[in-house]
Image (tube, rainbow, N blue to C red; front, side, top):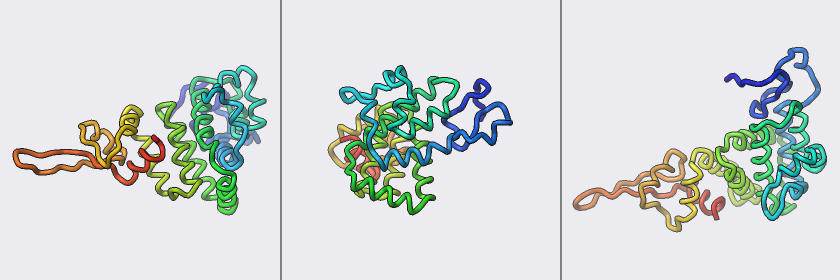
Length: 241
């Protein structure tokens, strides 16, 4: 897919690019491209710290960080350093929103105990393929998030994985559900206490794998409701509580 960009401008969303768009002579530039974000993100998850610079009264205040210069914040948050190198021409709307998503995701992991982070670090250090797979999956999810509340939900799900409350496959299914569902439906799901949704809007969560349709044959007609799947129950109990 083509992107309308100025010569030399970088698109954070193209994770596989490793150089600027424009001058072909820059293809071998040592400056990191989108792929450099993968180890930086995994490092940020394993290390903790630094994200407090982006918070004020529980809210992400990226505007102040941008006004002061991202380079200062990047000293404490390595992945922001990689983004600073990527976005040489200036912060555009797409890049700004991606930074906000990234900050919200990392902040959702702030309460993860150091022991769980260390265990995660040991696993990714021992398995670079897993490290790259996780990093790329997270970056794709964050870029695709269509609501600024979703990165925090993805962070809660990934935090449950770090704490071994769920396995990685369950996290992937939860993340896919969060990606496909509308935020408005997820907010309504948070109010559901039972194992099923008995209102028609439950059908909207079927494509996300959060509910399934169940038709009950009764005298005089049928009754349709929408039981939560295992993934749906995990999304509600872990991400929306």
